[in-house]
View 1 (cartoon, helix red, strand yellow):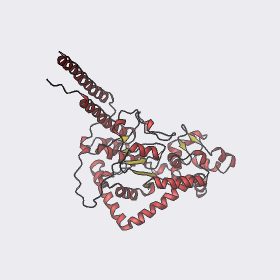
View 2 (cartoon, one colour; view 1 turned 135 degrees about the horizontal axis):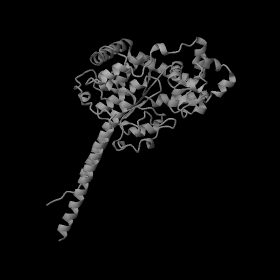
View 3 (cartoon, rainbow, N blue to C red; view 1 turned 135 degrees about the vertical axis):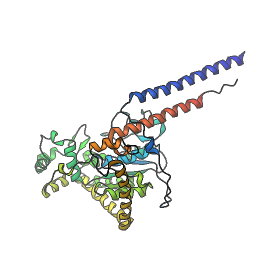
View 4 (tube, rainbow, N blue to C red; view 1 turned 90 degrees about the vertical axis):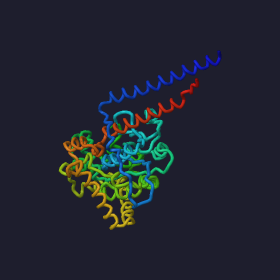
Length: 395
């Protein structure tokens, strides 16, 4: 009698777990149907050829923490890292909302992503906007040997780009950048602008130091700035330079032990030269002095970068740049009919070409693709764990 009763109980438990598993699967399918803006069919992009290169015996690094700096060609680098994550079934740190930030103005912390459906998978790649918190990012990426990288830009050029892109002029009485710099010569106005930031304190003066997590109140404390720059040099394996994009990609390839096909890049969110504001030598000097903290950062890492290139070897660098250019040209010819910079028309075309679509995705669209893949892996992991928990019923 007891054996029949136990069998009946186990049978009920088994039916319950089976029903729950079906419920989870149906929920996932419903979510896919509702999220029509998410592109999920990228199977052709995942068909990677076997690496037969004898160039190196190093092992590709699959954990990367990339700080996506504002207006430093960061969308292009984000595409590289998240494309690699998608193709290799790696998990990226992503916000749940349709947003390109995890943190900022607050520093990054794991609590910002612990409610995401894919949090149970662990993380391999960080490549979204955040306010850097090195220990927290390192914890999020878990064990292994993560590489920490970012890209910086000459500070005056960066601020000129920020001024137009984020419409700083609207918060300053609709004055042009040259007019703003002329006003900086006034001591009272300069004092007023000391801690100036807009949009929930997210954008403003010394943007690179801010993105790295440096306190705004210490922008004019040269000793603290220099100490922080030295700490950054310890924390980051490689700081790329926007003005030296090709050299940066070559050095990144050797740091990560990736292949050039992994590092193919197209110019995403790039401005036309005609929209850039020309500054006089006096105005550039004023701006550089006002951005002294960022200037100290750039000076330090530009020197380190140039030393890396010299150590790598100039002839070898030129040879590697040719290999990179050749790989890019192959993609450009196949996907863009020879046009290296993406216009809106070309973006539409490349997204309709099998094997090409991932190269043209940026921002929300790219993150949506990763979220869909990670959501699916997370659901499958839940179903697998339920399957492991289902009691075995013997008849």
